[in-house]
Length: 329
Image (cartoon, rainbow, N blue to C red; front, side, top):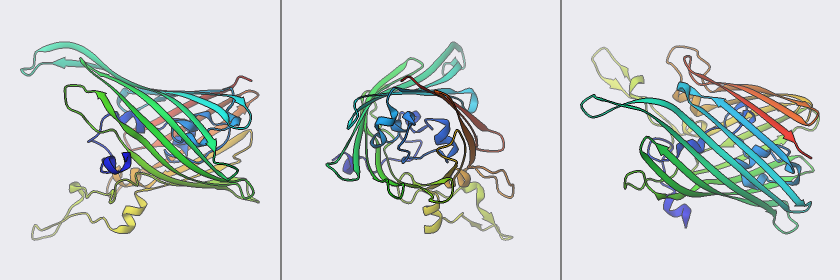
């Protein structure tokens, strides 16, 4: 029922609580921005796919911070606890963003003082095996709060994920529905939709090579996803303009994210990713600026894991992601 009523949601610009779609951890950022199939110690993974909640996350605490574009700061935190080694693992997480300070003016240009903006979401997650099969089903309940200047809003949403895990060939495939919900209280009387997303992902560790590949198809609720950019229209000698064309293959690529982890289970691992939509939308014509590329690493020291990622957005704006995960057992 939720899918049938919300499937028309847009990718960006027409929904509220857009911070819910920000990258949740350095590991996610390094692998292209979205990965839904890591079923291991990574407790932050459950913020994007609750079906990945598992006993390896027991007593793991993760803290992540990003110095984002335009002086924006945001971060995430996650923790999981297991009291039954079979199925009973609970997860709690927080997403938070601070937009910084702004100078306020009224409609005629008089200064009204400075103001701030911030948003946060608190999530509770749980996953369980479906019988004795290789399928696991999980869900998150999110409580969302937002304050922008004098306006505030409160909302609620759910995430649902179904994942298939084949331990024999170390392969996972998953289908995820994120941010299905509504505003409970609005900013100024106008009810806005949430950034619903449907995604599909696969990953596998190679048998004889210390590498795990990731393939993600994001924003499947909107097709086509590509919009022609008027700034890239071509003009001939007679002044006729030809708009940028977006064919089927380009639309498929703009839904695609690829990533790879080298030495995925080692003390030190390297992570690489490419986001085709980011690379396409933020590229500069006739200039090589490597938009869409991301790279990072993870380092394990006893009961602590440190992660760092650098993500390329444009030639003028990049982002660095920092993460720390502690084993409290």
